[in-house]
Length: 222
Image 1: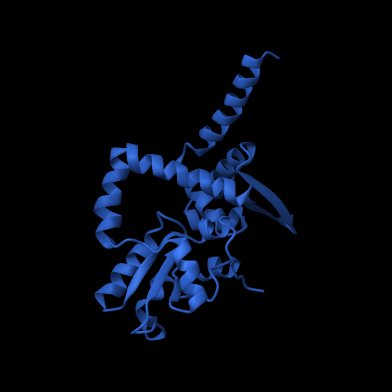
Image 2 (image 1 turned 45 degrees about the vertical axis):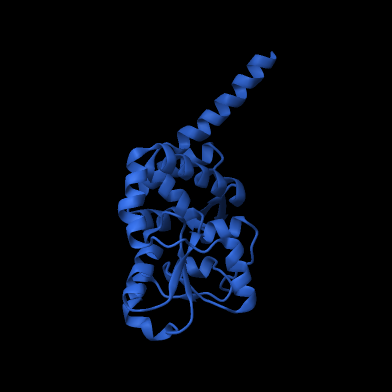
């Protein structure tokens, strides 16, 4: 094969990855898989897709080597094919979209930034605050996602239960909330709701998958 042919073969492989990313349902499925290994049934329920549709999208992601599988009993579980690489790829796609796609930029301004205009807490700052015991970490994802993995010492209050469990949050201590990733609305909504009630609260710059992909400490249920 000529050098030109080798380059074209590489580009063909990269194009397959890009094509696998080219559907909103597959991007959402990757976000859910990034929380931890999931079965087709679980992913179907979480993404509100039919079993057949979910399975079809997952097979496309698998052919592009964005996800791998593992069989446990009767279930086939899906996981990211490299947490660091796939999460970084998703984040890079997001940065390009925020900068270059007008609709993405508008939604970021009108929805996300309107609910939380403050600078989020970086992972580096979060590591220091956790080490010094300066914050309460609030995970607003569903309980099953929290059980798969979470930030050290995090308190899990799913967003839908936040109002009933406000008494569990400190009134005079900074809270840092996080959820599934940079576009997960749960943490933005939690921050807005808690600030309206007088809590000192900020948002982590992204979410659990990015924290894990960076090689930072995590905890999981036994």
